[in-house]
Length: 116
Image 1 (tube, rainbow, N blue to C red):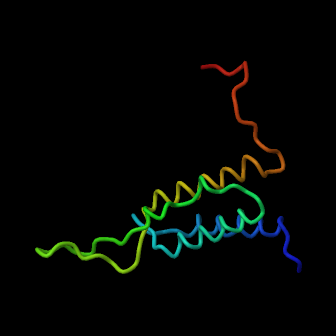
Image 2 (cartoon, rainbow, N blue to C red):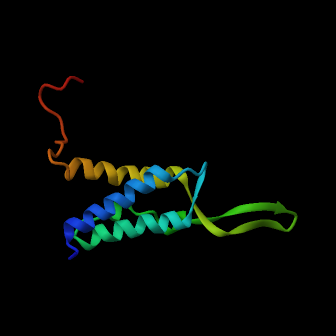
């Protein structure tokens, strides 16, 4: 099957939705999931979608403190990202899909009939 933009879009969306449905860590998420997330974003970028606002900054992917002793903290070898940050970015890109790529794109804004 020849790969095209629509196929890449569908695959990226499926990867993002699967990540959203399967992240079950309590407070922080392993770096492997951030890499999977960025792989899906790279697929979207390859078909011309600007995804820069949805990336997790490298500065947010850090080792965890495993223990603290009189010699200072000991850090994990694996890096993690706060779960809420990854979920917020995932939700943002999925909402972006719903707004811009659905069969009936949603209109954003206010109408004169909106009450304050």
